[in-house]
Length: 79
Picture: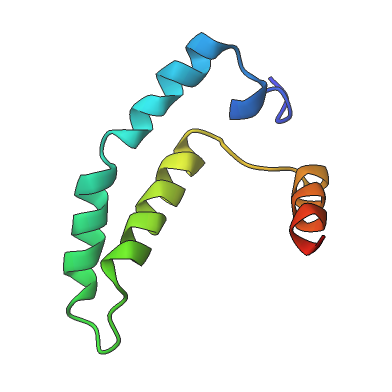
């Protein structure tokens, strides 16, 4: 399968539903990141740990944006 057809956004609904199983461990991962980060000199907040956990889940789901989508989103935000 090519990289373009393996994207989360290009899959049928049942494949997207199956890939959403990666969202289940987000609370556990966020707490684990937060607890391990508390030992550092400059800890990040729990909200950032939650965002990191979501990003890890979306990487596992192969949920990413190509340049055209990023550019269109930036153009909308700038207007």
